[in-house]
Image (cartoon, rainbow, N blue to C red):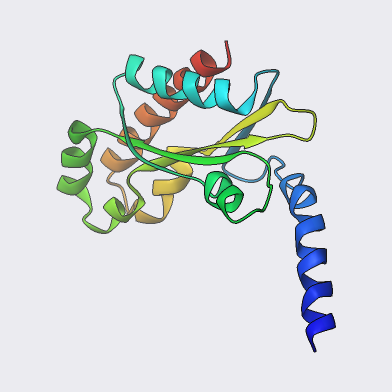
Length: 157
């Protein structure tokens, strides 16, 4: 039994870098390659968020915690962004939709040392909460789509 556990652990560790390679464009996602390092792209993303009027609400990633456990994995960071203006406006329309806030950017390190910036478009994230002919939530989501595109563009410069 111990040999099976060791074998599975080795497999999981050797497969970890390969798992990051599945970050491909998919419905509702924007996936953009960068020549920047993971650390630089993360720094530039946080600056771009602030410069574009949103706030970094959350940041989470397993890379440092894994390193403390002796496990090396590619850089991986999820950055949740939003602001109070959008929160109030969304809540006026849908309490349920606020479960999606903050909306997240994803910074992943590639095998060559560069990084990729990804995110689900806000219009995709909020689509399940848009009902009937009321377009107000869709309008907010499109505003956020534009803002997220600018943030992404600024972070990748």
